[in-house]
Length: 521
Ligand SMILES: NC(=O)c1ccc[n+]([C@@H]2O[C@H](COP(=O)([O-])OP(=O)(O)OC[C@H]3O[C@@H](n4cnc5c(N)ncnc54)[C@H](O)[C@@H]3O)[C@@H](O)[C@H]2O)c1
Image (tube, rainbow, N blue to C red; front, side, top):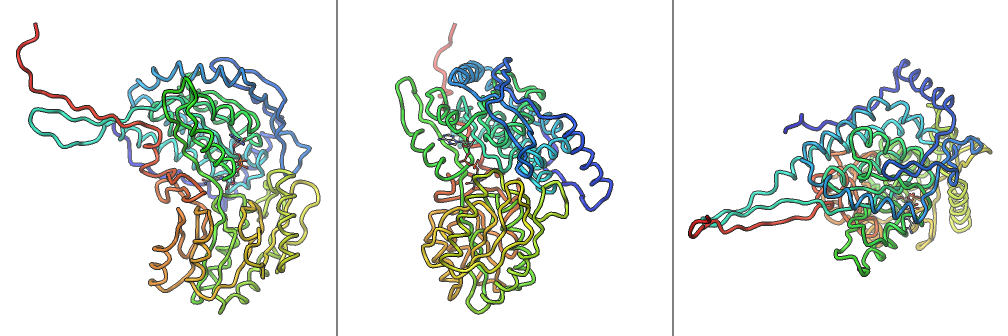
C-alpha cells in the first residue's frame, strides 16, 4: 500500500472575508448548540455527568462542556477493555490501521471550523492558533499513518547463506495517553494516533480544562473505525492519570504536560509491581524555560516582532514560547525600549476577535500565577512595559516585559507559562550560552545573529531540542520541525518526526536456520 507523499494541511487564509465569515458562523452555531456533554467512554458504555465543568476562560460564566469524571472502576474497565482488544487491533494489517487514521483526518478536515470554534471557547485559543491546532492534528494522523506503514515493512538485515534474518516492530500493548490543554486536539491526537497506528490500544486521559476537545477527537477516531475497546476516553483530574500510570496493565505512557508531573510519572513508571511482567516506557514531552539569544549584530526590525510573537501569542501558553531574552549589552537598552513600545500597545481581549493579540489565560490559577511572578519581577527588578486596557472580567493576565532581574530570580528560572518576558543583559554570546546551559530545561531556544560563525557556535553549544535561528521560536510543523525537548523538558523523542513511532513499538529479530536436514513426513 502506498500513499501520496505527506504534505502539511494548509491553514485557513484569514485575510479573506468569506473565510472570516465562516468562522463567525461556526462560533454562532457552536454557541447555539449549548454545552457539550462529555462522557466517560469505555467500550460501548457512555456515562455522562457534571463532575467537571469546562468554562470559557474569557467569560467564565459561559459553560462550554459538562463532563463526567472517571472513577477507579472506569479506569479498571478501560484497561480491561484495552488489554482484551490489544491482540486483535495489533494483528490488523498496518494498511487497515493507516486507513482508519486517514479517515479520522478526513473527519477532522470536514469539521475543522466546528473544532476550531470549540477551541476558541474551551481554551480561549485565538482563531489562527485554533485553526493551526486542528491542522496539526490532521498532520499527525496523516504523517503517522505513513510512518506506521513504513515500519510494518521491517528492516533490512544482513543475510548470509544458511540463515534468514528478519526484524519487525511489534506493538507494545496498552498505551496510556495523558495530555495537556494548550494544544487540546493536536497533542492528544498525535500521541493517540502514534500509538494506534502502530497497533497499540489507547486509554486517553485528557486535561481537565479541555474535555470537550478530547471528546470531539475520540468521536472522530471511533467513527473512523477504531474499535470501541481499543480507545477509551477517561476525563478527570490528575489522579485519573496517576492511576493509569501505576497500573500494571499499562505498557507505554505517552505524556505531555508540566515537568513536575512528567518527573513524577517517570518515577512511578519505574516501579515493577507484582503482576507486571514488563518494563513501562515513558514518552514525556514537558515544560521549558525558553531563551532567545540576541547578538549585537541582530536586526532589531526582525527581532522585536519575532519576540512579541514568540512570547505573547496565545498569552505565552505554548510550551515553545519565549520566556527569557539574553541580549548583547551593546543593544540591550535599545531592544528593551522597542520591546516596551510593542508590548504596551498589545491588544488584550477575547480569543474570538481577530484584532486581539493576547487572549486570556486558561484559568484563574494561571492568571494569579502570572500576577505573582510579575509582582516578584517588579519587586526585585524593573517592569519595562505592560499592556494597557486589560479586561477585568475573565482570566486575563497582563502582558509585560521585565528587566534588571537578579541572577537566580525565579522569574528567570521557572516556567511561568504566561505573557511575561524577561530580558537580560549579557557580555557576549558565550555568556548567553553559559546561562542557557545552566538551566535544567532544554525545550526550544532562539538565536538572532547575522554572523554565520556565531550561528555555528550556538548550534554546537545549545542543549535545546529545537533551536530557531533568526525567526520566532514557536510554530513547529509536523515533518518540517519534529518537536521535543531534552534535559528535564522531555525524553528526547520528537513528535512529528521520523523516529517518533519507534517509541511505541518493540523490535523483534528472528534468525532462522534455513539448512534443512532430512524430510519431514
Ligand atoms: N514539550 C511539549 O511538547 C509540551 C507541549 C504542550 C505543553 N507542554 C507543557 O505542559 C504544561 C501545561 O499543560 P498542563 O497545565 O495541562 O500540564 P499538567 O502537567 O498540569 O497536566 C498535564 C496532564 O497531566 C495530568 N496529570 C496531572 N497530575 C498527574 C499525575 N500526578 N499523574 C498523571 N497525570 C497527571 C493532567 O490532568 C493533564 O491531563 C506546561 O508545562 C507546558 O510547557 C509541553
